[in-house]
Amino acid sequence: MYIHRQLEKEVFPLLGRKEAIAIIGPRQAGKTTFLGYLKEMLEGESKKVKFITFENKADLDLFNQSIEDFKEIAIQYDCFIIDEFQYATDGGQKLKYLYDTTKVKFIISGSSSLELTFQTGRYMVGRLMEFILPPFSFREFLSYKNPELFNLLEGKKITDIVEFDHQKTLGKEIQRRLLTLFEEYAVYGGYPAVALTENKEEKYKVLESIANKYLLKDIQGVLRLKATDDLWRLEKFLAGQIGNMVKYEELSRASGLTFKELKEHLNILEKTYIISLITPFFRNKRTELTKNPKVYFFDLGIRNFALNDLRRLTDRNDSGAMAENYIYNVLERNFYPADIKYWRTKSKAEVDFILEKEQALLPFEVKYSSKKIIGKSLYSFINKFNPPNAVIFTKDLVSEEKIGNTTLKFIPLFYF
Image (cartoon, rainbow, N blue to C red; front, side, top):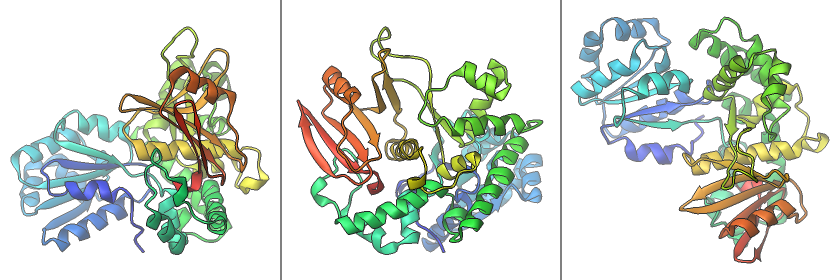
């Protein structure tokens, strides 16, 4: 069963263009399935399409050892799809040659932006359009789990966070059901193999397999690390720090890594889609912090597995941090490639997320509560920067009010 991905809306209009397309993202996020669907769509338009994977040694050897022979095969097709492109040797240089000397549309995929983007992108400047395919979003998860609720959300056409209309919201019972499914999603995450598994014990086993077999071992193989013990120890420590500022000295002590090794390992975890680091927003260096990043996980299921804690949100004390992590991923999907920041002053006033859009600042707070909570920090930010809009993501509260010239919206986080 194919679950339609939100990325389709971005990629489909570009299939008729000459530029190559790169689909990147973590292992097991559904890239191969997505590429297979692209193949079906193109063949439905009478295009001749070839699909190969560089996990197949024969195909990889042909590309690596004889690019001219590979080209002779490629020119027989309108579109050539290559899965797991990161295994190629000098892949970017060879892809540039194929792009420049044929009329073939190339679509590639890979699971490490360290390998794929750096090694390929530097040769393919102006020739390659890159897209990230993450694990299922909540709405994609919902389309499988409860198509009726998914259709209700889609029917409301609620897609723009800033333009959210509180009069278009659904009834309380529907929101209660959405919240129940959101809390399942927040615990187990959006990896397709996990989301499509019903039994909780099986979900755990699938998460274990993804974490151990695909993520860390893939990092070890692709980046040729001698061991992943340090990465795993660092990942487990970071799992308990989501939404908090990263303190390098503390991380160095906890992981047993030198400062240089720590920075390298954080970069690996980030570029292989396990964690995300966001830096502070500042206009005044003297009053606002300008150094320490905050950490979030690309997928909450992997984060919770690292903690060995798959309890329900109602039974745990980190539900607020998990909600904040979820909203970071929502903002990343909705506003990519915009740079998401956080704001914190030396007097410890803090706003979870800041986005600069069309020269206006947009503050976002996350309050996983049914009550109307407006913290002093958000008031402080609004008074200081006078943004046109501000958003507080809530558990299930819907409301709207004005603070000076700022429209403040309270939006249940499961709408996105």
